[in-house]
Length: 223
Ligand code: CDP
Image (tube, rainbow, N blue to C red):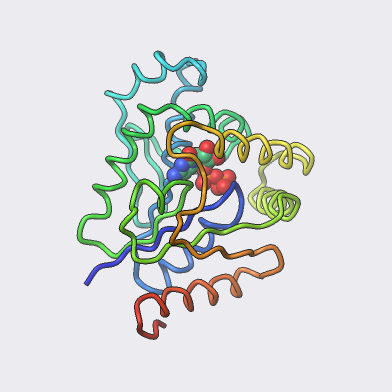
């Protein structure tokens, strides 16, 4: 029997890292929905489209083709944008794109299509509330914004990306605000989600905590 794990939470709360680990350890398919919003943002910036110009962004949708591969690569219209979508320019603009209803409806269709007959772990902002309200397991990951900014700063340094701590902190605050105040499918915990505060937990500790939640929900021990 297939099942779905929905992981939501604010920016840089560790959702994607944990989702990847869970997917590898449990043989689930990981769907990183943030990467999809980032890919559309990348394309808009490349085409010189203002990310707050809703008609111009929407006009692009019919020609967009997004692919996520099993080895975590992201393609938009055949272009490998796996690295490019993590730039600070994309991070600065993605929440404007994600607040556009038509963009969300376009991506949500794709996201639901990707889960068909598969056991999956999907991470984002509205997975438990809107994309997969029927998901068997819903986890809402939180951590203090300072901890999240430090994690993103260290991650960027490791990957050779630019950006100082203060800039990252202000980007996370801005995105948290826009993501949780937009009209359509805002960031918020589903009523039946389990809140996991990861502020003082290491990655292996969060993975263990998630596996426990999943085991309890499924009523069986998982590896
Ligand atoms: O990894 P990080 O926490 O920086 O963010 P992300 O998961 O890559 O998502 C980037 C942005 O896409 C978020 O700040 C949201 O604006 C948007 N997003 C969304 O609105 N809904 C989702 N399901 C996933 C991402």
